[in-house]
Picture 1 (cartoon, rainbow over the protein chains, first blue to last red):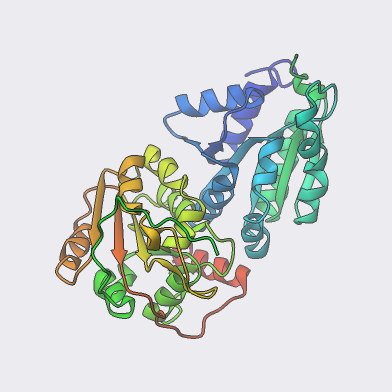
Picture 2 (cartoon, rainbow over the protein chains, first blue to last red):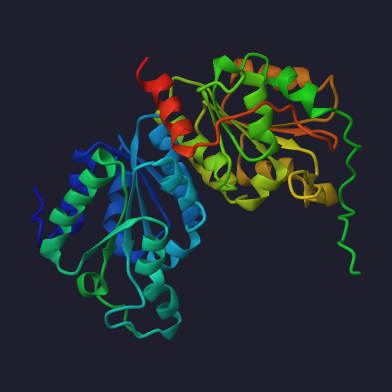
Length: 172
Length: 204
């Protein structure tokens, strides 16, 4: 068993799979490297690289129509690409779980990242999503575990933000 | 007024098929499939064909979603044949989805693009395909292993064969004339369309 604090990425993959999540949709990001690599290596999961994040919103709606569960892995800039398609999720009451590795916040050194990074939480809330944040390694497993309940049991659309406090700011 | 460039490399025959006959003639028995239909003409057409069946998820918004919804559904329901029925406008909005679908290569999925070359819902403006963009070539370049183009009534037989005999992931470009789809009154309450589709599929 991976240590849930020191090796939270591997513990997180195990948590998602233990909760019957089989479709891992992603636009590559360093913050999600372990999840992406493990889904690619997992014969019982689908690793689904996207050309743009909004594809993942539609994919996971289709998965739910067929009785399957998925997760959308993206960076904060991708959240902006999803906005209109979240009409599908919220309007139809599809469950949604998305894990968003943040840029443009704590410790960011690249000014290009700030407009979208700072807008992620307000625009997702404006679309009707529940937004939770993980800022420390010990947050990840309990926060995502509760997000899974809110999403797949209560039918909510839930975004979990993985802060740069947790994953570290990229160095420039 | 500036003119749009009509792409000269294409040498397409004029569309002759009427969607109101061609779509039913291609799909034949929709109850054999799980269907995701994109807005607007495609969803209206398929709703009319099935008399608003719960086995059809028809979009009333979220333009561009249908092909990827079909992928999620096809991966979740490997033992069922899944059809995406979409228009040229909707497919163009998220055309990268063709590349994403081809990488997964689900053998139980067919994407049908009903291509009338126009944005029929918004004033019948030319779409990119109406000016020469060829979605069948884009699908082939994206990696769809089977691509067929239907220009005439005779071509419909090959499309029907693909839908019935499978042969893997496929893309069918159904070229039709401008003109309205068949229509019936349909349920536009989004969550009811989801709930009834899942109830019919998962609780039976």
